[in-house]
Length: 306
Length: 303
Image 1 (tube, rainbow over the protein chains, first blue to last red):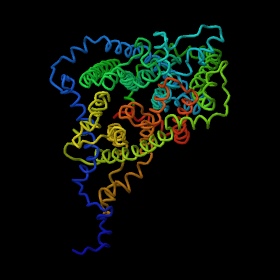
Image 2 (image 1 turned 45 degrees about the vertical axis):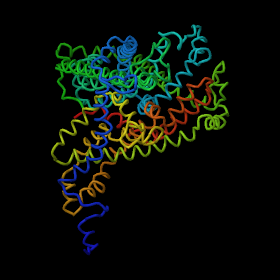
Image 3 (image 1 turned 180 degrees about the horizontal axis):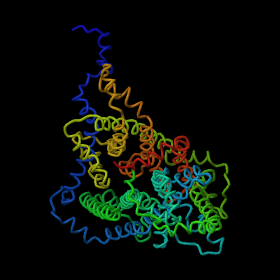
Image 4 (image 1 turned 180 degrees about the vertical axis):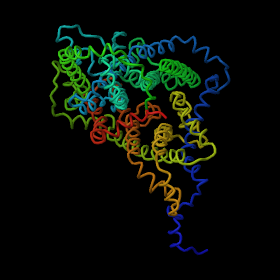
């Protein structure tokens, strides 16, 4: 059949060499790449991993059902609980420090009278664009025990050098500092944008009513920022529970696994011991934990908003 | 972003109002001190933020034995090119740089395209199952990536996929799993919801096909959001360490990992490697700060 190219042009048909999409079909075509990839690389792994967590490898290397045995093992696994304890310690100590610091910086940077605001904002945000692998090795060299820069400064002001890598306590401190350095600016930028969306006349009204700056902060800023704080708390919690790069590269699990994280333990189980079923169980243990913590935080956040 | 304020009554009394004048006088002296403290704190913080970068760049120009010399030498030296050559010889750093660049570019373009197409469908079309499918995408934002690692790794081995292809060490193994990003789809949908329907209707009346409307009209209008998503996607892929390590593709982060894990540590080389890892992102950041920050913020904006 002969076609008139001019007509085709005019009707916009096949201009891309594709059949013309009707309005009904178009959305399905548009979501299909995402949906196919999603089914293959997200839905399938989630389901398969769930199945794996109830299996074990027998002597011939075949996967057989083992019921709840993996989960029972997980509940009695002292290494897992050590890793979980280390991770939760970061959660309890580091996340509040980081978020408080981020809020303080954001409030200051939000002040109209501050000079070089753009400069400070960029500088504080900079660590957040750096690869965790890079951060980890930089910190490893800065905190090197005998000749590192930080210990040099400590000893030159008369303090004792610290065994950052051999003392479990200081090893944890080191990990906390590296994480704080990397993420504070990121949270600060989120808080800053939240603060900027609070209308200025609210503060003027408060000032007219005689509210001091700290009253303004605690009675006005904090309540209004609650949804943003809730978001950053949940985000930091989920991120912390999954920490891997820093534990693997900066402290390498630490002395006696003092900074072994759940993410690193999972990696060891899966890719060094090749125990895929048990690694899947650890992953689901982590998932359950994240869901529970998120629900708790969300409930707390909601309650306090009311 | 913020729920509508439910402000509890603030300085509720008129009695307090009278004290305003006295308070202001008191403020100015304390105010000056608090301002000085604030600047001091901010400057110290800025130094802490920047110093590791400076140290890294400076160390990259020193030979390994000088990096940890006592007292520390913080001024740049001349060994940069020697360090680069050594990196190329020891860990094939040129190959790692090439891999990282190629993977990040292909990943970013493909992923942003997939996200915008899907985001457009979710934002501007009504179709059966749209709510359910979009909900499924969002739900996986909560699921830790760890859950998918083992099955994904198996998929990349010859025994684990139906085609019997071994993808370990192949670019595809790094690129494929993360392409359909729930975060990207969410971000694009949010942006595209604000597109006026009249614009799309006008294009249809002019005889533009659905894909053409998307390509010629929707994408150009969405350029700022696309840029933010692209910058964010590129950065995450460029910086990612875990997954390339697992599927055995040599990228800059895994090369750094290999260097710092070896028995004789080449400090100058490591710092050169990390500098080369940080530098491209730093340059993009200097020119596209706004996009970086809106990419970071995108996650926090809900509804």
